[in-house]
Amino acid sequence: MRGTLTIPMLVLLAGGSAYPQKRYEKKGGYRFPEDSLAARDAMRELGRIQEIAKPYCSSGEKDACTVVQNAGRLAQGLNGYGGGGGAYQANGPPREYSENLQRMASVLESLAASHPDKGSAPAPGRASSISLDAAFAWLSQDLEAKARDCQSFGMGRLVPVKVRTLRAGPVADPGWELFYNCSFGGMTGDEIRAPGLTETTVPIPPAARCMFRARRGGREVQAGPIPVFDKPSVTVEISVP
Image (cartoon, rainbow, N blue to C red):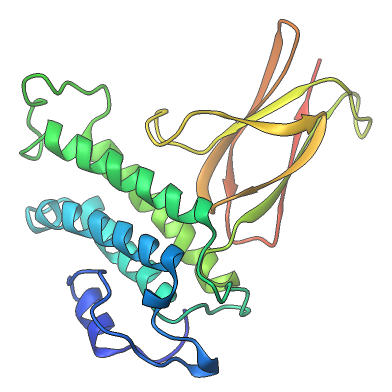
């Protein structure tokens, strides 16, 4: 995320759109991310998030303003093709990263349609159990986590998360199915079953907090919420009975 800001990016950070407008040569031979489908998808979703949040920011919703700002920080990192330790992929962010942003934008769009005015009741026929204010608060934290991870490790990476079940200290207990979920209120994605049993490593887009679960037979154990960002990797140890 380091580097000189282009004029369009200065406009973005001042409250403009995250949509790419022109192509610019970047140091190291990279071009503006129009050359990458994955990068273009990520920029589009960041732009959607900003456009939805802006009216609420203008009306005084602090978390909505933070959402606009952090979406701009991520777009800045994407525009610069990396930052931090130079870990950014030259071909753009992984598909899972762009899909994660897409789910965020879709959920926020749906909630904004359900609550056309700040603090209002859901529109008829569009009832929701999640408040828009709560969604902005969660999204501001999650985008902050992604922006911090971008600054430390480069834009658009997946965090290696090692998950294992333990019984009586360091002894692994076999036969447990492993699951994780980094969504808000179950609205930005269903729980995902991790591959393998007992111990596995899964690549996860940076997230403010994730929940992990182990299941064997009729027994279940949870761990979390656990931050998944701003570290080279994360280890989750689930103590099982």
